[in-house]
Amino acid sequence: MNTLKKKGLINKFYILPNGNIIKGMYMGNKYGYYSEIVLKYPFYSIYREFYPDGYLSKKCFFYSRGVSFGTSFFYDTKGILKKVDEDRKFGKIKIDYIMKFLEKQGLIDLKTGAGWFDSEFRYTSYSLEYNTIHNHKYWIIEKTKGVKFDPNIHRIEKGEPPLYLPFYWYIDGETGQIYTEEEWKAFEQEPWGKK
Image (tube, rainbow, N blue to C red; front, side, top):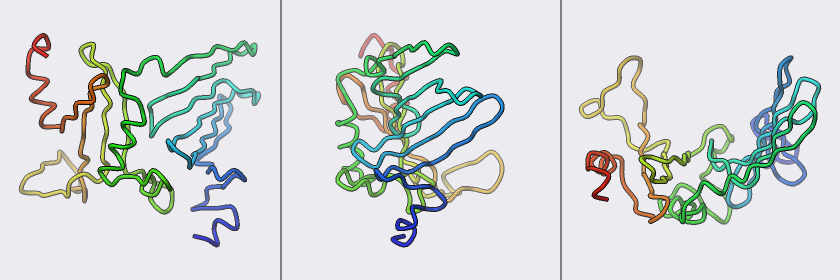
């Protein structure tokens, strides 16, 4: 891997002088994009999208695969800027709490970022979502290689069985209460007024 780093490449991904990795880019007739991985805490990505003429249409920051944070920038075709404060959606539980939980589960080393991606920067060990469910805010964490597939326990609809199935945690965005998927399903069955 050191040889690849010296050449500025990891698994055909370009490493920028600041250490960030270009994960993907494309320019077509209708739009283009550019995705960059930032290997510094809290380990996130920057996504830029472009109009066909090459001008920037949006710039967003994401934890994991899809939780936007910070300020997102949107430009219309005339270059007029609209800013969106993505952090307003979060409750009391912020990313620092989530990252410490991930480290405790052995999914990432917060000092080095080890564990976030595999050695070739193809797959992540976890993914994050942030949703509002029944007017309650929740972080949803998926451990990509959660449990080893067991044909005596698990069922799949079609195709070859996977080696691993994902494992989920649900974290209340206000209290930090942590639920496994089984606990969450039981919790969901209760009337929401009793919570």
